[in-house]
Image 1 (cartoon, rainbow, N blue to C red):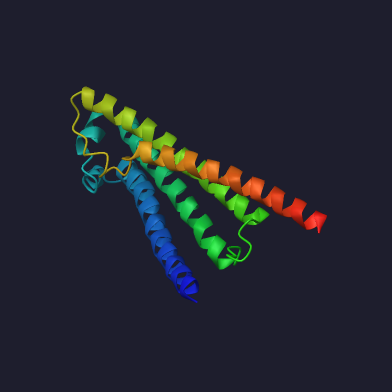
Image 2: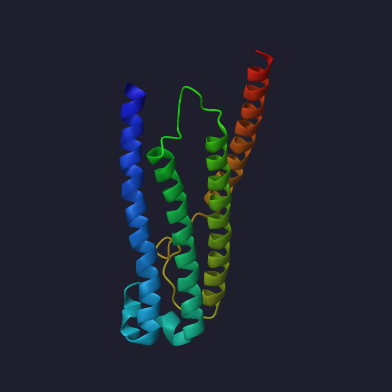
Length: 176
């Protein structure tokens, strides 16, 4: 009973984070298009006015990386929401094929977030070396690449364990 309450709470929390990430990804994309097409002053939404003056291409590149990272985070949260919504998380039989796929897909998404964050951090460092002011990577939502890469690798190992658990469970069912 207690586990069910915790899972419900986590489901609601995942929905809240998912909606927030949808808004963030959409705001990055909208801001990039609106700034480049209509109103350059919109670059002040994120303090990227200096970057826009440095070059529209670099502005678009930086916001594209931010958008891709946000979309990948949104997709990861969507997978989490769907595992709860579709009731594929059964604690009585945790070693099932669907949950194994979920863990693998989450590991690939977190690895992709880490890779995009590394690219974004290196791009930001290069731009900063050109004497262009850029806000902190945390403000750009590109910080923590090492954490995302570590989480992706960890989830991949857990996915392998789940895959082996499914194999062992099916072998066990065949022998009975």
